[in-house]
Image (cartoon, rainbow, N blue to C red; front, side, top):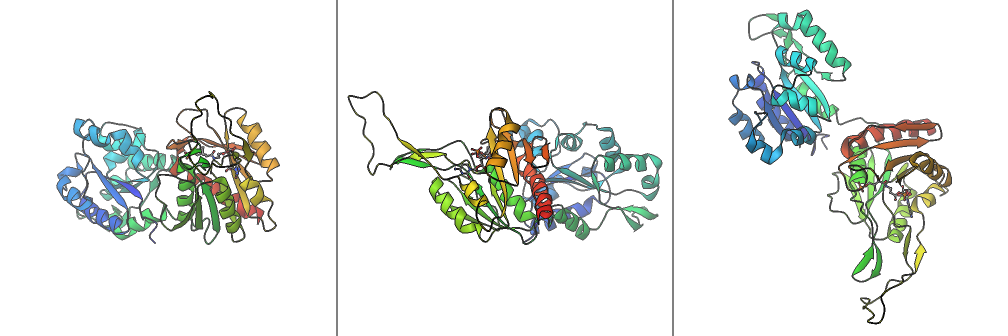
Length: 402
Ligand code: PMT
Protein backbone atom coordinates (compact mmCIF):
# COMPACT_ATOMS: atom_id res chain seq x y z
CA UNK A 1 0.00 0.00 0.00
CA UNK A 2 1.21 3.51 -0.72
CA UNK A 3 1.39 5.66 2.38
CA UNK A 4 -0.33 8.33 0.29
CA UNK A 5 -3.55 6.32 0.07
CA UNK A 6 -6.45 8.61 1.07
CA UNK A 7 -4.08 11.39 2.16
CA UNK A 8 -5.29 14.94 1.57
CA UNK A 9 -2.54 16.97 -0.06
CA UNK A 10 -2.83 20.71 -0.62
CA UNK A 11 -0.46 21.61 -3.43
CA UNK A 12 0.53 25.28 -3.66
CA UNK A 13 2.04 26.49 -6.92
CA UNK A 14 3.92 29.79 -7.15
CA UNK A 15 5.38 31.66 -10.14
CA UNK A 16 8.34 29.94 -11.74
CA UNK A 17 9.15 28.03 -14.89
CA UNK A 18 9.15 24.79 -12.85
CA UNK A 19 5.37 25.25 -12.42
CA UNK A 20 4.87 23.09 -15.50
CA UNK A 21 6.23 20.12 -13.50
CA UNK A 22 3.51 20.62 -10.90
CA UNK A 23 0.96 19.24 -13.38
CA UNK A 24 2.86 15.95 -13.42
CA UNK A 25 3.20 16.09 -9.63
CA UNK A 26 -0.60 16.26 -9.26
CA UNK A 27 -1.03 13.21 -11.46
CA UNK A 28 1.66 11.19 -9.71
CA UNK A 29 0.33 11.94 -6.23
CA UNK A 30 -3.13 10.89 -7.38
CA UNK A 31 -1.71 7.67 -8.84
CA UNK A 32 -0.52 6.86 -5.31
CA UNK A 33 -4.05 7.32 -3.93
CA UNK A 34 -3.74 10.91 -2.64
CA UNK A 35 -6.61 13.39 -2.86
CA UNK A 36 -4.98 16.57 -4.25
CA UNK A 37 -6.31 20.13 -4.21
CA UNK A 38 -4.39 22.85 -5.98
CA UNK A 39 -3.89 26.47 -4.88
CA UNK A 40 -2.16 28.86 -7.30
CA UNK A 41 -0.70 32.34 -6.86
CA UNK A 42 -1.27 34.99 -9.52
CA UNK A 43 2.35 34.61 -10.67
CA UNK A 44 1.88 30.85 -11.08
CA UNK A 45 -0.96 31.50 -13.53
CA UNK A 46 1.54 33.28 -15.81
CA UNK A 47 3.25 29.92 -16.30
CA UNK A 48 0.44 27.34 -16.25
CA UNK A 49 -3.34 27.70 -16.37
CA UNK A 50 -5.71 26.75 -13.55
CA UNK A 51 -7.73 24.87 -16.18
CA UNK A 52 -4.86 22.42 -16.81
CA UNK A 53 -4.58 21.72 -13.09
CA UNK A 54 -8.33 21.49 -12.67
CA UNK A 55 -8.53 18.95 -15.48
CA UNK A 56 -5.75 16.90 -13.89
CA UNK A 57 -6.91 17.08 -10.28
CA UNK A 58 -10.61 16.83 -11.12
CA UNK A 59 -11.23 19.54 -8.49
CA UNK A 60 -11.70 23.31 -8.71
CA UNK A 61 -8.37 25.13 -8.46
CA UNK A 62 -8.25 27.77 -5.73
CA UNK A 63 -6.76 31.13 -6.67
CA UNK A 64 -8.58 33.91 -4.80
CA UNK A 65 -8.44 34.77 -1.11
CA UNK A 66 -11.83 36.44 -1.06
CA UNK A 67 -13.91 34.55 -3.58
CA UNK A 68 -17.56 34.40 -2.46
CA UNK A 69 -18.18 31.30 -4.56
CA UNK A 70 -15.21 29.43 -3.12
CA UNK A 71 -16.09 30.56 0.41
CA UNK A 72 -19.59 29.15 -0.07
CA UNK A 73 -18.04 25.79 -1.05
CA UNK A 74 -14.82 25.31 0.88
CA UNK A 75 -13.68 28.52 2.55
CA UNK A 76 -9.99 29.31 2.96
CA UNK A 77 -9.87 28.33 6.63
CA UNK A 78 -11.60 25.02 5.92
CA UNK A 79 -9.20 24.47 3.04
CA UNK A 80 -6.24 25.13 5.35
CA UNK A 81 -7.62 22.56 7.78
CA UNK A 82 -8.45 20.06 5.05
CA UNK A 83 -4.86 19.23 4.13
CA UNK A 84 -2.93 16.45 5.83
CA UNK A 85 0.14 18.09 4.29
CA UNK A 86 0.71 21.40 2.48
CA UNK A 87 3.38 21.24 -0.24
CA UNK A 88 4.44 24.36 -2.14
CA UNK A 89 6.18 23.33 -5.38
CA UNK A 90 7.66 25.34 -6.91
CA UNK A 91 8.31 27.87 -4.16
CA UNK A 92 9.70 31.09 -5.67
CA UNK A 93 12.15 33.45 -3.91
CA UNK A 94 9.33 35.98 -3.54
CA UNK A 95 6.98 33.44 -1.95
CA UNK A 96 9.71 32.21 0.41
CA UNK A 97 10.31 35.83 1.51
CA UNK A 98 6.59 36.40 2.13
CA UNK A 99 6.37 33.13 4.04
CA UNK A 100 9.35 34.05 6.23
CA UNK A 101 7.69 37.40 7.03
CA UNK A 102 4.38 35.71 7.88
CA UNK A 103 2.48 37.69 5.25
CA UNK A 104 -1.08 36.73 4.36
CA UNK A 105 -1.66 38.80 1.24
CA UNK A 106 -2.96 36.07 -1.05
CA UNK A 107 -4.73 32.74 -0.70
CA UNK A 108 -1.63 30.55 -0.57
CA UNK A 109 0.25 32.64 2.01
CA UNK A 110 -2.94 32.79 4.11
CA UNK A 111 -3.30 29.01 3.96
CA UNK A 112 0.29 28.70 5.14
CA UNK A 113 -0.58 30.87 8.15
CA UNK A 114 -3.88 29.12 8.93
CA UNK A 115 -2.73 25.53 8.34
CA UNK A 116 -2.54 22.93 11.05
CA UNK A 117 -0.59 20.43 9.00
CA UNK A 118 3.08 20.28 8.23
CA UNK A 119 4.35 22.54 5.43
CA UNK A 120 7.02 21.55 2.92
CA UNK A 121 8.39 23.80 0.19
CA UNK A 122 10.39 22.94 -2.92
CA UNK A 123 12.42 26.08 -3.78
CA UNK A 124 12.93 26.84 -7.48
CA UNK A 125 14.71 29.95 -8.72
CA UNK A 126 17.76 31.30 -10.48
CA UNK A 127 21.03 30.24 -8.79
CA UNK A 128 22.04 33.83 -7.94
CA UNK A 129 18.64 34.48 -6.33
CA UNK A 130 19.01 31.26 -4.35
CA UNK A 131 22.54 32.18 -3.22
CA UNK A 132 21.47 35.70 -2.20
CA UNK A 133 21.86 36.31 1.53
CA UNK A 134 18.20 37.38 1.85
CA UNK A 135 16.94 34.09 0.41
CA UNK A 136 19.37 32.09 2.54
CA UNK A 137 18.28 33.98 5.67
CA UNK A 138 14.63 33.38 4.80
CA UNK A 139 15.24 29.64 4.31
CA UNK A 140 17.05 29.49 7.65
CA UNK A 141 14.06 31.16 9.33
CA UNK A 142 11.67 28.66 7.75
CA UNK A 143 13.83 25.70 8.79
CA UNK A 144 13.82 27.00 12.37
CA UNK A 145 10.02 27.06 12.17
CA UNK A 146 9.97 23.38 11.29
CA UNK A 147 9.03 23.95 7.65
CA UNK A 148 10.61 21.26 5.48
CA UNK A 149 12.80 22.54 2.64
CA UNK A 150 12.94 19.99 -0.17
CA UNK A 151 15.91 20.74 -2.43
CA UNK A 152 16.74 22.60 -4.53
CA UNK A 153 18.72 20.49 -7.00
CA UNK A 154 21.74 21.80 -8.82
CA UNK A 155 22.34 21.86 -12.57
CA UNK A 156 21.51 23.69 -15.80
CA UNK A 157 18.75 26.25 -15.36
CA UNK A 158 16.08 27.49 -17.78
CA UNK A 159 17.82 30.92 -17.86
CA UNK A 160 21.10 29.36 -18.99
CA UNK A 161 22.88 29.58 -15.61
CA UNK A 162 24.27 26.53 -13.89
CA UNK A 163 24.04 26.00 -10.12
CA UNK A 164 21.66 25.25 -7.24
CA UNK A 165 18.08 26.43 -7.65
CA UNK A 166 16.31 23.80 -9.78
CA UNK A 167 13.14 22.33 -8.33
CA UNK A 168 13.58 18.66 -7.35
CA UNK A 169 12.32 16.17 -9.92
CA UNK A 170 8.73 14.98 -9.60
CA UNK A 171 9.86 11.47 -8.54
CA UNK A 172 11.79 12.90 -5.63
CA UNK A 173 8.90 15.15 -4.58
CA UNK A 174 6.48 12.21 -4.59
CA UNK A 175 8.95 10.18 -2.54
CA UNK A 176 9.38 12.96 0.01
CA UNK A 177 5.63 13.49 0.23
CA UNK A 178 5.07 9.76 0.84
CA UNK A 179 7.86 9.69 3.43
CA UNK A 180 5.96 12.27 5.50
CA UNK A 181 3.36 9.57 6.18
CA UNK A 182 5.76 6.68 6.83
CA UNK A 183 7.25 6.87 10.26
CA UNK A 184 7.89 3.13 10.57
CA UNK A 185 7.67 3.73 14.34
CA UNK A 186 5.41 0.70 14.85
CA UNK A 187 6.69 -1.45 11.98
CA UNK A 188 5.30 -4.98 12.35
CA UNK A 189 3.78 -4.28 15.79
CA UNK A 190 0.28 -5.70 16.44
CA UNK A 191 -1.99 -3.03 17.82
CA UNK A 192 -5.57 -3.48 19.04
CA UNK A 193 -7.71 -0.36 19.49
CA UNK A 194 -11.19 -0.07 20.98
CA UNK A 195 -13.24 2.83 19.64
CA UNK A 196 -16.66 4.43 19.68
CA UNK A 197 -19.53 4.01 22.13
CA UNK A 198 -21.20 0.86 23.38
CA UNK A 199 -24.97 0.32 23.38
CA UNK A 200 -26.60 -1.38 26.32
CA UNK A 201 -29.97 -2.77 25.36
CA UNK A 202 -33.06 -1.94 27.44
CA UNK A 203 -35.43 -3.74 25.10
CA UNK A 204 -35.42 -4.51 21.34
CA UNK A 205 -35.86 -0.81 20.41
CA UNK A 206 -34.08 1.14 23.16
CA UNK A 207 -30.58 1.32 24.51
CA UNK A 208 -28.28 3.35 26.77
CA UNK A 209 -25.24 4.85 25.05
CA UNK A 210 -23.05 7.99 24.94
CA UNK A 211 -21.77 10.69 22.57
CA UNK A 212 -18.58 8.98 21.37
CA UNK A 213 -18.28 9.23 17.57
CA UNK A 214 -15.27 6.94 17.25
CA UNK A 215 -13.21 9.71 15.60
CA UNK A 216 -10.35 9.56 18.13
CA UNK A 217 -10.03 5.78 17.92
CA UNK A 218 -10.29 5.67 14.12
CA UNK A 219 -7.68 8.44 13.81
CA UNK A 220 -5.35 6.42 16.02
CA UNK A 221 -5.98 3.30 13.95
CA UNK A 222 -5.05 5.21 10.80
CA UNK A 223 -1.93 6.68 12.45
CA UNK A 224 -0.86 3.21 13.65
CA UNK A 225 -1.23 1.80 10.11
CA UNK A 226 0.78 4.73 8.75
CA UNK A 227 3.46 3.89 11.31
CA UNK A 228 3.63 0.32 9.96
CA UNK A 229 1.50 -1.46 12.58
CA UNK A 230 -0.84 -4.38 11.95
CA UNK A 231 -3.96 -2.87 13.38
CA UNK A 232 -7.25 -4.30 14.62
CA UNK A 233 -10.08 -1.94 15.48
CA UNK A 234 -12.80 -3.17 17.84
CA UNK A 235 -15.53 -0.67 17.20
CA UNK A 236 -18.87 0.17 18.74
CA UNK A 237 -21.52 1.59 16.38
CA UNK A 238 -20.18 4.63 14.45
CA UNK A 239 -20.80 6.38 11.14
CA UNK A 240 -17.13 6.12 10.15
CA UNK A 241 -15.40 4.13 7.43
CA UNK A 242 -12.75 1.72 8.59
CA UNK A 243 -9.28 3.18 7.83
CA UNK A 244 -7.62 1.32 4.93
CA UNK A 245 -5.56 -1.74 5.85
CA UNK A 246 -7.02 -2.01 9.29
CA UNK A 247 -9.20 -4.95 10.35
CA UNK A 248 -12.45 -3.91 12.03
CA UNK A 249 -14.52 -6.04 14.38
CA UNK A 250 -17.98 -4.52 14.92
CA UNK A 251 -19.60 -4.84 18.31
CA UNK A 252 -22.60 -3.28 20.05
CA UNK A 253 -22.39 -3.84 23.77
CA UNK A 254 -19.65 -3.67 26.40
CA UNK A 255 -19.87 -7.44 26.84
CA UNK A 256 -19.29 -8.00 23.13
CA UNK A 257 -16.40 -5.51 23.15
CA UNK A 258 -14.93 -7.28 26.19
CA UNK A 259 -15.10 -10.66 24.49
CA UNK A 260 -13.53 -9.36 21.23
CA UNK A 261 -10.78 -7.57 23.17
CA UNK A 262 -9.90 -10.63 25.27
CA UNK A 263 -9.72 -12.75 22.10
CA UNK A 264 -7.40 -10.24 20.42
CA UNK A 265 -5.11 -9.62 23.37
CA UNK A 266 -2.99 -12.79 23.17
CA UNK A 267 -1.71 -11.77 19.80
CA UNK A 268 -1.15 -8.12 20.52
CA UNK A 269 1.82 -5.90 21.43
CA UNK A 270 -0.06 -2.69 22.20
CA UNK A 271 -3.67 -2.24 23.40
CA UNK A 272 -5.20 1.24 23.14
CA UNK A 273 -8.62 1.81 24.71
CA UNK A 274 -10.28 4.91 23.27
CA UNK A 275 -13.80 3.48 23.49
CA UNK A 276 -16.37 5.09 25.76
CA UNK A 277 -17.61 1.88 27.36
CA UNK A 278 -20.81 1.93 29.40
CA UNK A 279 -19.87 1.21 33.00
CA UNK A 280 -23.31 -0.32 33.66
CA UNK A 281 -25.97 -2.19 31.66
CA UNK A 282 -29.58 -3.04 32.39
CA UNK A 283 -29.61 -6.28 34.39
CA UNK A 284 -32.02 -7.86 31.93
CA UNK A 285 -32.86 -6.54 28.46
CA UNK A 286 -36.59 -7.11 27.89
CA UNK A 287 -37.45 -9.49 25.05
CA UNK A 288 -40.38 -7.34 23.95
CA UNK A 289 -40.78 -3.58 23.72
CA UNK A 290 -41.50 -2.25 27.21
CA UNK A 291 -44.99 -0.69 27.31
CA UNK A 292 -45.92 2.48 29.17
CA UNK A 293 -47.73 1.72 32.41
CA UNK A 294 -50.84 3.92 32.46
CA UNK A 295 -50.79 4.17 36.24
CA UNK A 296 -47.08 4.95 36.71
CA UNK A 297 -45.12 8.21 36.26
CA UNK A 298 -41.76 6.56 36.78
CA UNK A 299 -39.86 3.56 35.58
CA UNK A 300 -36.95 1.87 37.30
CA UNK A 301 -34.18 0.06 35.52
CA UNK A 302 -31.84 -2.10 37.53
CA UNK A 303 -28.30 -1.71 36.25
CA UNK A 304 -25.36 -4.01 36.81
CA UNK A 305 -21.67 -3.34 36.36
CA UNK A 306 -19.99 -4.13 33.04
CA UNK A 307 -16.54 -5.71 33.07
CA UNK A 308 -13.68 -3.23 32.76
CA UNK A 309 -12.19 -4.24 29.40
CA UNK A 310 -8.96 -2.30 29.77
CA UNK A 311 -8.31 -3.45 33.34
CA UNK A 312 -8.91 -7.07 32.31
CA UNK A 313 -6.52 -6.77 29.34
CA UNK A 314 -3.92 -5.12 31.58
CA UNK A 315 -4.11 -7.93 34.12
CA UNK A 316 -3.93 -10.75 31.55
CA UNK A 317 -0.96 -13.08 31.92
CA UNK A 318 0.49 -12.22 28.51
CA UNK A 319 -0.15 -8.56 28.86
CA UNK A 320 0.35 -6.07 26.01
CA UNK A 321 1.57 -2.49 26.53
CA UNK A 322 -1.65 -0.86 27.76
CA UNK A 323 -2.79 2.66 26.91
CA UNK A 324 -6.00 3.98 28.42
CA UNK A 325 -7.95 7.14 27.71
CA UNK A 326 -9.60 9.13 30.48
CA UNK A 327 -12.62 11.33 29.80
CA UNK A 328 -12.75 13.76 32.71
CA UNK A 329 -14.67 16.93 33.52
CA UNK A 330 -12.61 18.06 36.55
CA UNK A 331 -9.27 17.36 38.23
CA UNK A 332 -8.16 15.80 34.97
CA UNK A 333 -4.62 14.91 35.99
CA UNK A 334 -5.52 13.49 39.41
CA UNK A 335 -8.30 11.27 38.06
CA UNK A 336 -6.19 10.15 35.09
CA UNK A 337 -3.34 9.18 37.40
CA UNK A 338 -5.84 7.28 39.55
CA UNK A 339 -6.86 5.25 36.47
CA UNK A 340 -3.21 4.66 35.52
CA UNK A 341 -2.52 3.16 38.94
CA UNK A 342 -5.84 1.36 39.58
CA UNK A 343 -5.97 -0.32 36.18
CA UNK A 344 -2.17 -0.92 36.12
CA UNK A 345 -1.65 0.86 32.80
CA UNK A 346 1.51 1.99 31.05
CA UNK A 347 0.07 5.30 29.97
CA UNK A 348 -3.16 7.31 30.16
CA UNK A 349 -4.25 9.93 27.64
CA UNK A 350 -6.65 12.29 29.39
CA UNK A 351 -9.07 14.74 27.82
CA UNK A 352 -11.22 17.32 29.56
CA UNK A 353 -14.59 16.55 27.97
CA UNK A 354 -16.23 19.56 29.63
CA UNK A 355 -14.30 21.84 27.23
CA UNK A 356 -16.07 23.06 24.07
CA UNK A 357 -14.60 21.91 20.76
CA UNK A 358 -12.65 18.91 22.02
CA UNK A 359 -13.41 15.42 23.29
CA UNK A 360 -16.67 13.71 22.36
CA UNK A 361 -17.71 13.97 18.70
CA UNK A 362 -15.48 16.93 17.81
CA UNK A 363 -12.85 16.93 15.07
CA UNK A 364 -10.20 18.25 17.45
CA UNK A 365 -8.82 17.14 20.76
CA UNK A 366 -6.41 18.32 23.39
CA UNK A 367 -4.89 15.83 25.78
CA UNK A 368 -2.61 15.36 28.75
CA UNK A 369 -0.35 12.31 28.70
CA UNK A 370 0.06 10.77 32.14
CA UNK A 371 2.53 8.00 32.95
CA UNK A 372 4.70 6.83 35.84
CA UNK A 373 7.30 9.50 35.04
CA UNK A 374 5.02 12.54 34.99
CA UNK A 375 2.55 14.40 32.81
CA UNK A 376 2.89 16.00 29.40
CA UNK A 377 0.27 18.31 27.85
CA UNK A 378 -0.12 18.34 24.06
CA UNK A 379 -1.52 21.25 22.03
CA UNK A 380 -5.05 21.24 20.62
CA UNK A 381 -4.91 19.57 17.22
CA UNK A 382 -7.16 17.80 14.76
CA UNK A 383 -7.69 14.21 15.92
CA UNK A 384 -5.83 13.05 12.77
CA UNK A 385 -2.74 15.12 13.63
CA UNK A 386 -2.96 14.41 17.34
CA UNK A 387 -3.10 10.67 16.64
CA UNK A 388 0.24 10.90 14.79
CA UNK A 389 1.80 12.65 17.80
CA UNK A 390 0.32 10.06 20.14
CA UNK A 391 1.75 7.22 18.07
CA UNK A 392 5.18 8.78 18.55
CA UNK A 393 4.64 9.11 22.32
CA UNK A 394 3.33 5.54 22.57
CA UNK A 395 6.11 4.00 20.48
CA UNK A 396 8.83 5.76 22.54
CA UNK A 397 7.40 4.39 25.79
CA UNK A 398 6.76 0.96 24.25
CA UNK A 399 10.38 0.76 23.06
CA UNK A 400 11.66 1.71 26.53
CA UNK A 401 9.47 -0.90 28.18
CA UNK A 402 10.63 -3.74 25.86
O1 PMT B 1 -15.07 8.94 20.00
P1 PMT B 1 -14.86 10.46 19.96
O2 PMT B 1 -16.14 11.19 19.68
O3 PMT B 1 -13.73 10.84 19.06
O4 PMT B 1 -14.46 10.93 21.42
C1 PMT B 1 -13.23 10.52 21.97
C2 PMT B 1 -13.36 10.17 23.47
C3 PMT B 1 -13.74 11.41 24.27
C4 PMT B 1 -14.41 9.08 23.65
C5 PMT B 1 -11.95 9.63 23.90
O5 PMT B 1 -10.99 10.63 23.72
C6 PMT B 1 -11.94 9.18 25.33
O6 PMT B 1 -11.76 9.94 26.28
N1 PMT B 1 -12.17 7.85 25.55
C7 PMT B 1 -12.35 7.25 26.88
C8 PMT B 1 -13.74 7.46 27.34
C9 PMT B 1 -14.04 6.83 28.67
O7 PMT B 1 -14.95 6.08 28.74
O8 PMT B 1 -13.20 7.11 29.62
P2 PMT B 1 -13.30 6.47 31.13
O9 PMT B 1 -12.54 7.45 31.94
O10 PMT B 1 -14.70 6.21 31.50
O11 PMT B 1 -12.54 5.10 31.00
C10 PMT B 1 -11.15 4.96 31.22
C11 PMT B 1 -10.55 3.93 30.29
O12 PMT B 1 -11.09 2.63 30.58
C12 PMT B 1 -10.85 4.18 28.83
O13 PMT B 1 -9.68 3.85 28.13
C13 PMT B 1 -11.98 3.21 28.50
O14 PMT B 1 -11.93 2.79 27.14
C14 PMT B 1 -11.68 2.06 29.44
N2 PMT B 1 -12.87 1.31 29.90
C15 PMT B 1 -13.81 1.94 30.67
C16 PMT B 1 -14.88 1.20 31.15
C17 PMT B 1 -14.99 -0.16 30.80
N3 PMT B 1 -16.00 -0.88 31.22
N4 PMT B 1 -14.06 -0.73 30.03
C18 PMT B 1 -13.01 -0.03 29.57
O15 PMT B 1 -12.15 -0.56 28.85
